Length: 302
View 1 (cartoon, one colour):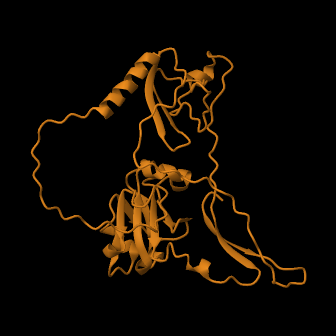
View 2 (view 1 turned 60 degrees about the horizontal axis):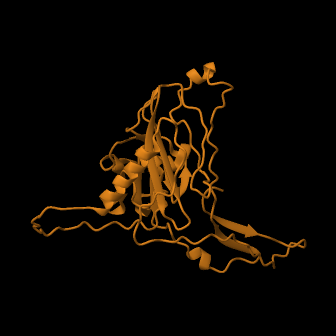
View 3 (view 1 turned 90 degrees about the horizontal axis):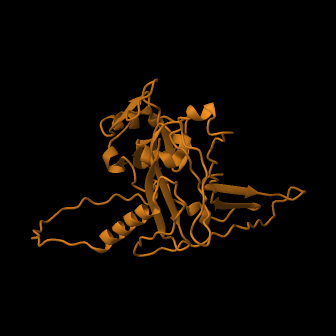
């Protein structure tokens, strides 16, 4: 299971007696170490293509470090005004994989007061979305067959058979609208056309775990594990292969697990696409302490 889920285990003896104790060996997870202040580090280095001069990359890194350490301001006059801040909505129970509140639009239950039909109420509230027969469509991305259908994610579970009009507005706590690719990428193909992350007022309620289970049963929350898909990289017999000339891939190479040596260097081999031009390379990584490293550079294929 790639996501967390509520699991119910049940067992009986051969004589159909349910007087059974069930225990689970849960896997241990390494603790997350948080730092109060982010630090800029350059822990990732790689052997660059011949077209890239390593000294130019190091020079750019040094410029970034100098800018971070040197921030000079001219004399300024600050005028203070009383600002009334809108109370931040409570999205602590949201199952949005991007993080609570990270969405193109957030609709709270206060905006749905007096609502009878959720589909009709959202017409005047939600933006960039067209609701047809109770099904939301993403107007930000319009394909050959019109705007794509958006999925409903209710308390973390994707529901493809439920329409907006089937939901009782009184039980909804928040609706997070995901339309742009930056928010949909984490869901992969499951929500390619967009998504409405709906959190009900019952979400986050784990009181059922405190109840004594029935004899021979055990309830617990299983933390899922997502195994990344392997990125496809073509292999050509010779650089003059005809298939190489027709290679029009948008993403040339991607690897989720690059291991460097003791000197911090590694070597990567891949085929460029069949299109000439400038290619952009992004290298990102994280060390054992949670510090991030990132480097962006470009090279030309002629």
